Length: 270
Length: 282
Ligand SMILES: Nc1ncnc2c1ncn2[C@@H]1O[C@H](COP(=O)(O)OP(=O)(O)O)[C@@H](O)[C@H]1O
Ligand SMILES: [Mg+2]
Image (tube, rainbow over all chains, first blue to last red; front, side, top):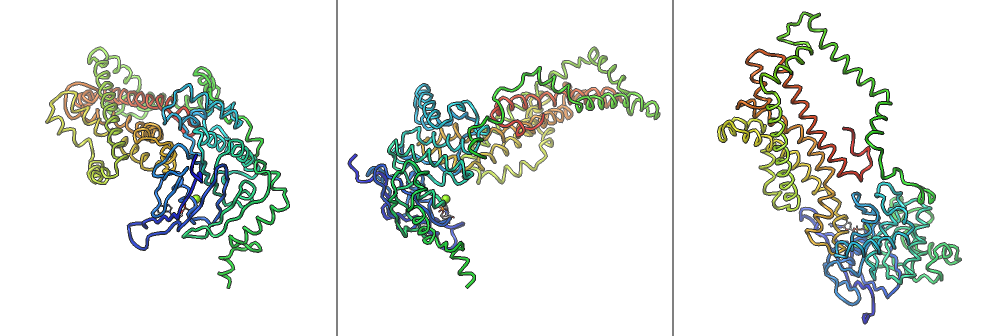
């Protein structure tokens, strides 16, 4: 690999035409430049509606920037490609396919043989503690298991870059912790490069090498914070690290949350 | 949900009970016996109330007279032939109407342009009472089976079309993006995502269509021809033979139930992956 970065957003701006073409076009993100080195895990936090998902869609090649470019391994991204895979808050498991068939979806679309697919899928399900549920249908699984299956489906394509859009935000607190640990381990062991969107600040800090903070719309990166805590594959251990609270407090401040009130509320009171 | 639930057993095992077990289970339920009791009560009232209330048989023949008429018609009017013909017409009309509704529904769903251009006409046609076309079709095609089948096709077409169209239109765009992220072609997106995702809606349309098909055929037969149960209705009316009209109504109901059951059975097979309560009762 000759490129300096695995994933790079270079001066990316995205505007949407507003409904019925009337009024100002909506600037979702403005002039965002982010670069992820090989194996790096970077989180983005920011107020909702600031354009995080928009950024991710452009990274996946599902949408084109209005201005600027996105590169994967130095190649300009113009359409979806097999080096990048994404995972969303919604598991998007197809209800008519069993778990194994869901995990096979990507390979099936790309024309892999049935035996290859089953082999890879079975391997992945075992790795994600779903071995006994290969033949089950999504509705028979709990939310945490479904999200695990979605992670397995994402990894089935063996992507270099993984884009995660609030993947755990619909889960209860305990399940979330377990899945965070699973994810952290997989990303570490398989040396994946990951862009992770979340609104959970401690999740961002405990999983990432770097945390980027976005402003409200039009979203742009207002702060970069390098997380200098060891043990990235073990978020539980990281959470107990003395510097953890320091990072979290600083990020809370950047998001305008001070003393348990929101910046907006304080402005409204004034 | 806790992490123990996370590893817990699924809510329902994949293999369901056998048919025999289901019947045994049904017979063990009190509601089923009460329901059967109702049927017996209904038949008893039908048998004994009319004579007691001095209702003449040409208004309301007792059920035993209807039974007698059934066996008479088997010999005299070749009832099997008329019933069989109507059944076949219903099946053909239903199948063709459903296929047409599916093809047009998916085509409109996949092409917003086409939908925009055609939707006013489709709406207008949907409002037109389809059975009003029956005389027209008979004028065009004569006293054959074709005008009857045509009415059925037309009447089955719309609920299937509308249901398929709405399912394609309301599919979660994230689902489509998922397939796109795997570099799926347009055809793959249709066959792997949109088509299977439309199955619950398609079957909702088919359920409605199966009962409408019977209406379409009967109206066609009522308007013209000398075969089928619709014709027997006209004949019975002309002869003042109330029992014959009842026999025909009951047979038409049986055909409707069979068509509906066929759809339900197919639905159970195709939608086997859904939680049972979402498929709904028969
Ligand atoms: N396809 C679209 N058309 C028009 N506006 C959009 C579209 N997608 C997103 N937006 C708008 O762009 C802004 C950013 O959205 P999004 O990226 O989903 O925010 P986030 O993920 O940070 O909550 C929002 O105001 C949203 O309404
Ligand atoms: Mg979002």
